[in-house]
Length: 278
DNA sequence: ACGAGATCCTGTCAGC
DNA sequence: TGCTGACAGGATCTCG
Image: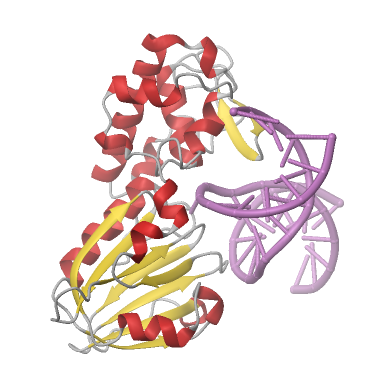
Protein backbone atom coordinates (compact mmCIF):
# COMPACT_ATOMS: atom_id res chain seq x y z
CA UNK A 1 0.00 0.00 0.00
CA UNK A 2 2.38 2.64 1.10
CA UNK A 3 4.33 4.20 -1.73
CA UNK A 4 6.80 7.06 -1.63
CA UNK A 5 4.39 9.77 -0.35
CA UNK A 6 2.92 7.60 2.40
CA UNK A 7 6.34 6.40 3.55
CA UNK A 8 7.57 9.99 3.53
CA UNK A 9 4.66 11.14 5.71
CA UNK A 10 5.19 8.23 8.09
CA UNK A 11 8.92 8.93 8.33
CA UNK A 12 8.37 12.61 9.06
CA UNK A 13 5.88 11.77 11.78
CA UNK A 14 8.19 9.20 13.33
CA UNK A 15 11.08 11.66 13.25
CA UNK A 16 8.97 14.00 15.38
CA UNK A 17 7.92 11.31 17.80
CA UNK A 18 11.08 9.24 18.09
CA UNK A 19 14.22 11.29 17.56
CA UNK A 20 16.33 11.14 20.68
CA UNK A 21 14.28 8.37 22.26
CA UNK A 22 15.96 5.25 23.56
CA UNK A 23 14.66 1.83 22.56
CA UNK A 24 14.67 -0.17 25.78
CA UNK A 25 13.43 -3.50 24.50
CA UNK A 26 12.11 -5.20 21.40
CA UNK A 27 9.26 -7.68 21.58
CA UNK A 28 8.81 -9.84 18.51
CA UNK A 29 5.26 -11.18 18.33
CA UNK A 30 5.57 -12.62 14.84
CA UNK A 31 8.98 -13.91 13.79
CA UNK A 32 7.92 -13.73 10.17
CA UNK A 33 8.06 -9.94 10.46
CA UNK A 34 11.83 -10.14 10.80
CA UNK A 35 14.21 -10.93 8.01
CA UNK A 36 16.85 -12.17 10.46
CA UNK A 37 17.03 -14.16 13.72
CA UNK A 38 15.32 -12.49 16.68
CA UNK A 39 18.49 -12.36 18.80
CA UNK A 40 20.54 -10.68 16.08
CA UNK A 41 17.78 -8.14 15.50
CA UNK A 42 17.47 -7.35 19.18
CA UNK A 43 21.23 -7.00 19.60
CA UNK A 44 21.34 -4.35 16.87
CA UNK A 45 18.34 -2.38 18.14
CA UNK A 46 17.95 -2.66 21.90
CA UNK A 47 19.51 -0.08 24.15
CA UNK A 48 20.09 2.44 21.36
CA UNK A 49 18.82 5.92 20.76
CA UNK A 50 17.09 7.04 17.59
CA UNK A 51 19.53 9.45 15.97
CA UNK A 52 17.59 10.06 12.78
CA UNK A 53 14.50 8.84 10.92
CA UNK A 54 14.58 9.02 7.15
CA UNK A 55 13.19 7.46 4.01
CA UNK A 56 14.71 5.88 0.93
CA UNK A 57 12.36 4.51 -1.75
CA UNK A 58 9.58 2.80 0.23
CA UNK A 59 11.79 2.04 3.22
CA UNK A 60 11.45 3.70 6.61
CA UNK A 61 14.93 3.94 8.11
CA UNK A 62 15.95 4.61 11.72
CA UNK A 63 19.60 5.34 12.39
CA UNK A 64 20.40 4.16 15.89
CA UNK A 65 23.34 5.13 18.10
CA UNK A 66 24.52 3.91 21.49
CA UNK A 67 27.09 6.60 22.22
CA UNK A 68 30.18 4.78 21.10
CA UNK A 69 31.73 5.99 17.86
CA UNK A 70 31.48 3.72 14.82
CA UNK A 71 28.67 1.74 16.38
CA UNK A 72 25.79 3.11 14.33
CA UNK A 73 23.17 0.62 13.35
CA UNK A 74 20.14 1.05 11.14
CA UNK A 75 16.65 -0.33 11.44
CA UNK A 76 14.94 -0.68 8.07
CA UNK A 77 11.21 -1.33 7.74
CA UNK A 78 9.48 -2.19 4.48
CA UNK A 79 5.71 -1.92 4.90
CA UNK A 80 4.87 -3.71 1.64
CA UNK A 81 1.09 -3.91 1.27
CA UNK A 82 -0.49 -3.42 4.67
CA UNK A 83 2.30 -2.64 7.11
CA UNK A 84 1.94 0.23 9.56
CA UNK A 85 4.30 1.96 11.97
CA UNK A 86 2.60 3.78 14.81
CA UNK A 87 4.16 5.81 17.59
CA UNK A 88 2.21 5.35 20.81
CA UNK A 89 2.41 7.51 23.90
CA UNK A 90 2.80 5.97 27.34
CA UNK A 91 -0.21 3.75 28.16
CA UNK A 92 -1.75 4.38 24.76
CA UNK A 93 -3.33 1.15 23.47
CA UNK A 94 -2.49 -0.53 20.17
CA UNK A 95 -4.85 0.42 17.35
CA UNK A 96 -5.39 -3.27 16.63
CA UNK A 97 -3.92 -5.94 18.89
CA UNK A 98 -4.46 -8.75 16.39
CA UNK A 99 -2.03 -7.42 13.81
CA UNK A 100 0.81 -6.29 16.05
CA UNK A 101 4.00 -7.97 14.82
CA UNK A 102 6.87 -6.14 16.56
CA UNK A 103 6.76 -3.80 19.54
CA UNK A 104 9.64 -1.42 20.28
CA UNK A 105 9.42 -0.32 23.90
CA UNK A 106 10.87 3.10 24.56
CA UNK A 107 12.63 4.20 27.70
CA UNK A 108 10.06 7.00 27.95
CA UNK A 109 7.27 4.45 28.37
CA UNK A 110 5.98 5.00 24.85
CA UNK A 111 6.10 2.43 22.10
CA UNK A 112 6.69 2.09 18.40
CA UNK A 113 4.39 -0.60 16.98
CA UNK A 114 4.82 -2.41 13.71
CA UNK A 115 1.46 -3.80 12.62
CA UNK A 116 0.70 -5.74 9.48
CA UNK A 117 -2.46 -7.51 8.37
CA UNK A 118 -1.10 -9.45 5.43
CA UNK A 119 2.31 -10.20 6.93
CA UNK A 120 4.28 -9.16 3.87
CA UNK A 121 6.08 -6.33 5.64
CA UNK A 122 9.57 -6.85 7.06
CA UNK A 123 11.92 -5.35 9.63
CA UNK A 124 15.65 -5.71 9.23
CA UNK A 125 18.51 -4.30 11.29
CA UNK A 126 22.02 -3.62 10.04
CA UNK A 127 25.36 -3.09 11.73
CA UNK A 128 27.77 -0.34 10.62
CA UNK A 129 27.96 -0.26 6.82
CA UNK A 130 25.45 -3.06 6.48
CA UNK A 131 22.66 -1.06 4.93
CA UNK A 132 24.71 0.11 1.96
CA UNK A 133 25.82 -3.46 1.34
CA UNK A 134 22.26 -4.81 1.30
CA UNK A 135 21.65 -5.83 -2.33
CA UNK A 136 18.08 -4.49 -2.40
CA UNK A 137 19.23 -1.14 -1.07
CA UNK A 138 22.29 -0.94 -3.29
CA UNK A 139 20.21 -1.62 -6.40
CA UNK A 140 17.66 1.13 -5.79
CA UNK A 141 17.37 3.76 -8.48
CA UNK A 142 17.42 7.48 -7.69
CA UNK A 143 14.72 9.29 -5.76
CA UNK A 144 12.29 10.82 -8.28
CA UNK A 145 12.09 14.08 -6.33
CA UNK A 146 15.88 14.48 -6.61
CA UNK A 147 15.93 13.91 -10.37
CA UNK A 148 15.62 16.62 -12.97
CA UNK A 149 13.89 15.97 -16.29
CA UNK A 150 17.14 15.34 -18.16
CA UNK A 151 18.34 12.76 -15.65
CA UNK A 152 14.93 11.09 -15.61
CA UNK A 153 14.90 10.84 -19.39
CA UNK A 154 18.43 9.50 -19.36
CA UNK A 155 17.44 6.75 -16.90
CA UNK A 156 14.83 5.51 -19.36
CA UNK A 157 16.75 6.05 -22.57
CA UNK A 158 17.57 2.84 -24.35
CA UNK A 159 15.02 0.77 -22.47
CA UNK A 160 12.75 -1.25 -24.67
CA UNK A 161 9.96 -2.07 -22.27
CA UNK A 162 6.61 -0.47 -21.60
CA UNK A 163 6.55 2.67 -19.52
CA UNK A 164 4.44 1.57 -16.56
CA UNK A 165 6.40 -1.55 -15.61
CA UNK A 166 9.56 0.55 -15.81
CA UNK A 167 8.10 3.17 -13.47
CA UNK A 168 7.32 0.38 -11.02
CA UNK A 169 10.83 -1.06 -11.30
CA UNK A 170 12.58 0.16 -8.14
CA UNK A 171 15.99 -0.06 -9.77
CA UNK A 172 14.96 2.44 -12.46
CA UNK A 173 13.36 5.04 -10.17
CA UNK A 174 12.68 4.36 -6.50
CA UNK A 175 9.44 4.70 -4.57
CA UNK A 176 6.74 4.57 -7.23
CA UNK A 177 3.93 2.05 -6.85
CA UNK A 178 0.74 1.24 -8.69
CA UNK A 179 -1.24 4.30 -7.62
CA UNK A 180 1.29 6.97 -8.50
CA UNK A 181 2.32 5.21 -11.70
CA UNK A 182 -1.28 5.29 -12.98
CA UNK A 183 -1.91 8.83 -11.76
CA UNK A 184 1.24 10.34 -13.25
CA UNK A 185 0.72 8.57 -16.59
CA UNK A 186 -2.80 9.92 -16.81
CA UNK A 187 -1.69 13.46 -16.08
CA UNK A 188 1.05 13.16 -18.68
CA UNK A 189 -1.39 11.80 -21.28
CA UNK A 190 0.70 8.69 -21.77
CA UNK A 191 -0.77 5.23 -22.17
CA UNK A 192 0.70 2.82 -19.59
CA UNK A 193 1.38 0.28 -22.36
CA UNK A 194 3.41 2.73 -24.43
CA UNK A 195 6.92 1.67 -25.34
CA UNK A 196 9.50 3.99 -23.84
CA UNK A 197 11.35 3.94 -27.16
CA UNK A 198 8.30 5.49 -28.83
CA UNK A 199 7.88 8.34 -26.36
CA UNK A 200 10.65 10.81 -27.10
CA UNK A 201 12.29 13.26 -24.72
CA UNK A 202 9.49 15.84 -24.62
CA UNK A 203 6.85 13.38 -23.48
CA UNK A 204 9.24 11.81 -20.96
CA UNK A 205 10.01 15.27 -19.60
CA UNK A 206 6.28 15.87 -19.27
CA UNK A 207 5.91 12.57 -17.44
CA UNK A 208 8.68 13.60 -15.08
CA UNK A 209 6.93 16.90 -14.32
CA UNK A 210 3.61 15.12 -13.70
CA UNK A 211 5.24 12.48 -11.51
CA UNK A 212 6.95 15.08 -9.35
CA UNK A 213 3.72 17.07 -9.07
CA UNK A 214 1.63 14.04 -8.09
CA UNK A 215 4.13 12.91 -5.47
CA UNK A 216 4.43 16.40 -3.97
CA UNK A 217 0.65 16.87 -3.86
CA UNK A 218 0.22 13.48 -2.22
CA UNK A 219 2.80 14.24 0.45
CA UNK A 220 1.09 17.57 1.13
CA UNK A 221 -2.23 15.70 1.47
CA UNK A 222 -0.74 13.36 4.08
CA UNK A 223 -0.72 10.45 1.60
CA UNK A 224 -3.53 8.32 0.20
CA UNK A 225 -5.66 6.14 2.46
CA UNK A 226 -7.10 3.08 0.81
CA UNK A 227 -8.13 0.46 3.31
CA UNK A 228 -5.27 0.22 5.78
CA UNK A 229 -3.04 3.24 5.38
CA UNK A 230 -2.61 5.50 8.39
CA UNK A 231 0.28 7.79 9.21
CA UNK A 232 2.48 7.37 12.27
CA UNK A 233 -0.10 9.14 14.41
CA UNK A 234 -2.97 6.99 13.16
CA UNK A 235 -4.39 9.68 10.87
CA UNK A 236 -5.76 9.00 7.40
CA UNK A 237 -4.46 10.75 4.29
CA UNK A 238 -6.65 12.57 1.83
CA UNK A 239 -4.98 12.23 -1.55
CA UNK A 240 -7.34 9.37 -2.46
CA UNK A 241 -9.91 12.12 -3.04
CA UNK A 242 -7.69 13.51 -5.79
CA UNK A 243 -7.27 10.29 -7.77
CA UNK A 244 -8.13 10.79 -11.42
CA UNK A 245 -7.83 7.18 -12.58
CA UNK A 246 -6.75 4.85 -9.78
CA UNK A 247 -9.80 2.94 -8.55
CA UNK A 248 -12.07 4.71 -11.03
CA UNK A 249 -12.35 2.04 -13.75
CA UNK A 250 -15.77 2.20 -15.40
CA UNK A 251 -16.36 5.75 -14.18
CA UNK A 252 -16.19 8.71 -16.57
CA UNK A 253 -12.83 10.28 -17.31
CA UNK A 254 -12.64 13.63 -15.54
CA UNK A 255 -11.18 15.19 -18.67
CA UNK A 256 -13.22 13.79 -21.56
CA UNK A 257 -16.10 11.93 -19.94
CA UNK A 258 -15.40 8.61 -21.59
CA UNK A 259 -15.45 5.48 -19.43
CA UNK A 260 -12.05 4.71 -17.91
CA UNK A 261 -10.67 1.33 -18.90
CA UNK A 262 -9.12 -1.30 -16.68
CA UNK A 263 -6.57 -3.85 -17.82
CA UNK A 264 -3.70 -5.86 -16.43
CA UNK A 265 -0.12 -4.91 -17.18
CA UNK A 266 2.72 -7.03 -15.86
CA UNK A 267 0.36 -8.45 -13.29
CA UNK A 268 -0.85 -5.10 -11.97
CA UNK A 269 -4.30 -3.62 -12.29
CA UNK A 270 -4.01 -0.60 -14.55
CA UNK A 271 -6.62 2.10 -15.10
CA UNK A 272 -6.37 4.61 -17.93
CA UNK A 273 -8.32 6.67 -20.46
CA UNK A 274 -8.21 5.40 -24.03
CA UNK A 275 -8.74 8.87 -25.46
CA UNK A 276 -6.72 11.12 -23.15
CA UNK A 277 -3.73 8.78 -22.99
CA UNK A 278 -1.88 7.92 -26.19
C1' DA B 1 16.07 -7.61 -21.89
C1' DC B 2 11.46 -8.19 -21.40
C1' DG B 3 7.11 -9.90 -19.83
C1' DA B 4 3.83 -13.04 -17.96
C1' DG B 5 2.47 -15.74 -14.13
C1' DA B 6 2.82 -17.68 -9.62
C1' DT B 7 3.90 -16.85 -4.89
C1' DC B 8 4.20 -15.04 -0.09
C1' DC B 9 -0.43 -13.81 3.38
C1' DT B 10 -5.17 -12.39 5.13
C1' DG B 11 -9.03 -9.32 5.21
C1' DT B 12 -12.93 -7.25 2.71
C1' DC B 13 -16.47 -7.00 -0.43
C1' DA B 14 -19.73 -8.38 -4.12
C1' DG B 15 -22.75 -11.74 -5.60
C1' DC B 16 -25.55 -15.64 -5.13
C1' DT C 1 -27.01 -15.17 7.21
C1' DG C 2 -23.54 -17.86 5.00
C1' DC C 3 -20.64 -19.28 1.52
C1' DT C 4 -17.46 -18.56 -2.50
C1' DG C 5 -14.50 -16.23 -5.41
C1' DA C 6 -12.22 -12.03 -6.76
C1' DC C 7 -9.27 -8.65 -5.38
C1' DA C 8 -5.78 -5.65 -2.89
C1' DG C 9 -1.00 -0.59 -2.61
C1' DG C 10 4.96 -4.92 -3.26
C1' DA C 11 8.78 -7.60 -4.44
C1' DT C 12 10.85 -11.82 -6.08
C1' DC C 13 11.28 -15.98 -8.53
C1' DT C 14 10.88 -19.05 -12.62
C1' DC C 15 10.12 -19.73 -17.23
C1' DG C 16 9.49 -18.69 -22.20
